[in-house]
Length: 334
Image (cartoon, rainbow, N blue to C red; front, top):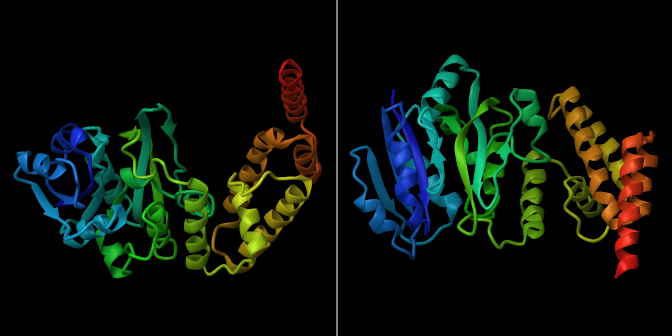
């Protein structure tokens, strides 16, 4: 059963040998490996052509189109029952594809899944993902339901519903929009195991980007694709729930945010986009986690969060007091 591995490449020359060797060494061997050179300006194309594996196919785009559309070209060329995504600077554990194919074969109701990833390079952390479909879907207004560089897609689902990248989407963050399209057609899942080592550094596509601006751009598309019409104030308020602040929040902002949380739950109750229990839990998690970022903006927004929550956990009160005292002491020494 053939699996298509799609690898977009742009200026990843120094990392290609190590990354592709980890694909060639997969314990699952019935692969076609499609590398799409997005008009690299370094020696990536030459390095790709020098790789020796009969399963590798190298295609070069006519012009630079960005990571999303380079990925789409690979998807269009894929002939496998499953499409596996791989980035050209990551390391793929030998059993990655075998385990993901086995999972998809055992769960025909799942159209797309991924695994956890461990970062390396500029930082080393494990990116954990929700495992079950309802929890993955509840993540969509806050993050990714699956991790793109660790994903496996059931090709027939993708093509039956014409799920694809679109050129008008932003180059950074469009993977979020791509995977959102599976929402109404299939189930998501994630394996609770690290199968990909994700390299973090200056070579990443989002390096040097204005992430607030990129997040705003992507989230406007997210709301549009979900059919959610929101005011500009509601949109900005939702960004705060994602800890993306256009300006320093004050107490009034936090009170508005609490109203938006309640309204968001009511909207989902009417539209049934996400399972109510899981969406309520995920929204509550976002609201609760926000508290620990607020003391940096002063006592007032943090207190407004506590009041709006309707309870005053002692650990949060202690955290606010300690943060405020340390901030005062630093100011007194300056």
